[in-house]
Length: 343
Image 1 (cartoon, one colour):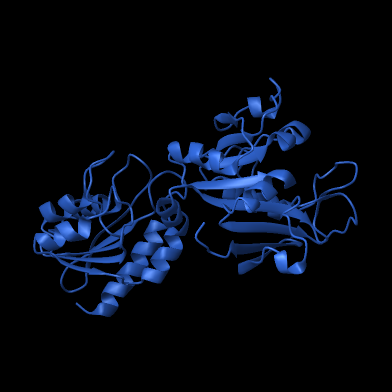
Image 2: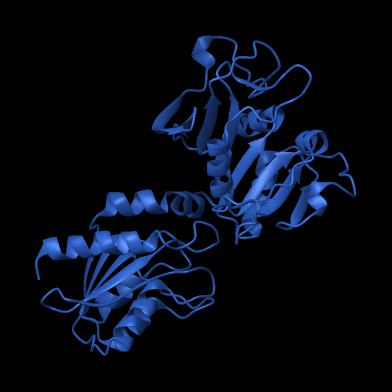
């Protein structure tokens, strides 16, 4: 079998992996099983915590197709796990099935689950790691960062006018951005584990903090609704309505917030504001990326998107690295990474 065939299979495995949920404690993983002449024997992907891992799903698919996988090659986007959690170790499942070769995109950095490649090699399986690794890391970026740093991956969402305002002087802000931007933001909410706002936003705006589909109905997955701050929340209001669990964290320390969410196995967190909370997370150095929805609207006054960051000259500015720019109706979405440091 050629290396080109295995690379093509890895690209297919990455496409399969992307079908899995972006939320939850487990990574997105895809697997394709090939016989020695490159014919696909089975495919699978991980559909969420508690469901079969991608390798086990692919083995089951091959059995349903009536294929014998002894001597096959397993092409997997992440190193097969080697521990028993909600499911058994994938390394053992592949060995039991008689797979002869395993091709991996990304090694598993998780000290609990890693070690699958070593077990497979010790049993005589040919293991290759690093095929299409850049694409694999791009897909797994939030999960890899969360596992590597021991805290959730943090996306800071900003939505404002062309001159950086998130509300008019009278406090009104609905709606600065377009329906297209709001639909995109709701789709992002459906991909994260937790949605975070401050008590100021919760009290002033009475948000529901739900993820909704295009027709306005609740999405299948609802993030944990987290409110940060010491002020009490009202007994009524939209937070009392349908949606994810509400968690009130009586602190102003972003690191305490992330520690509490990490303890709940949250891997991906969306911080939606307001300006004071945005500044607190930025000043704490715990923001990984920024999603800025910018509407072609000018106010000239009103609240800024981010409160004081402590910059006293242009040299003190926090500069981001633009990763992508998208047009959403009349608006523009800028996706930007915070420059990586030892944070």
